[in-house]
Image 1: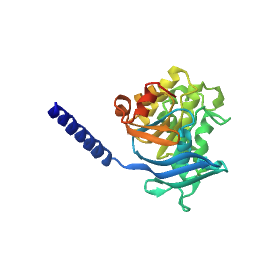
Image 2 (image 1 turned 60 degrees about the vertical axis):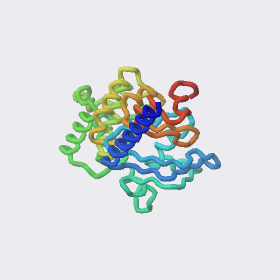
Image 3 (image 1 turned 120 degrees about the vertical axis):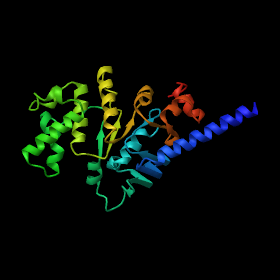
Image 4 (image 1 turned 90 degrees about the horizontal axis):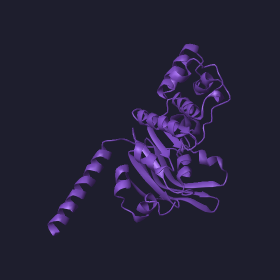
Length: 276
């Protein structure tokens, strides 16, 4: 019996070492260090320490009100649009603090794209939705814009569905198509990271599947952080999962480990449906 236990301990140590080795070979895109956030007197995020690696999908799960979306919106400083917010700690994007005075918010939001819970296309043509960002950044050449629009729509796997409708209003698209259009709009500015806040919660199952397949393709070129209430979705599409509860990170690990053998009983209780 003791020999078996010793073997199990040795195996766990080997697996832990293997995981550290795998992570060490990947570059950290976002490194959150001791992040705290308050809405007035409400302490919403508490000492968050989290490293997000490139070319991976990182899922953030947890019950409503646990800080998932707040954390996501801190990564591109959108949360600061709320006047009563204050923060401490630091977030590094490729080793540069996003709170550094020399790091302009406009630059940050160019490097970090955002896809919201509900599709939010502009009340413009499909073409102009995609060309909007590049135009803001000074691109006026029609040929270059045409190339960006086509490349972005192809990147979001929606080109074949809209290539003959580029001058039509984006509101004429289905909900699932609008969400993929918003992802294409995000790709047009060539971000480093894509943040997704419940991107499929307003979609039907078929559209959800298309977006999930798209996310799997996009991770080859981008780092993706996705907030989701759908634990099955997190299990399907992510490499790593962070479980948030009451403003803290209870557990952060490889997704298969989180769902098959969590280290914290609170994680197991949430995943098994005992609360949340």
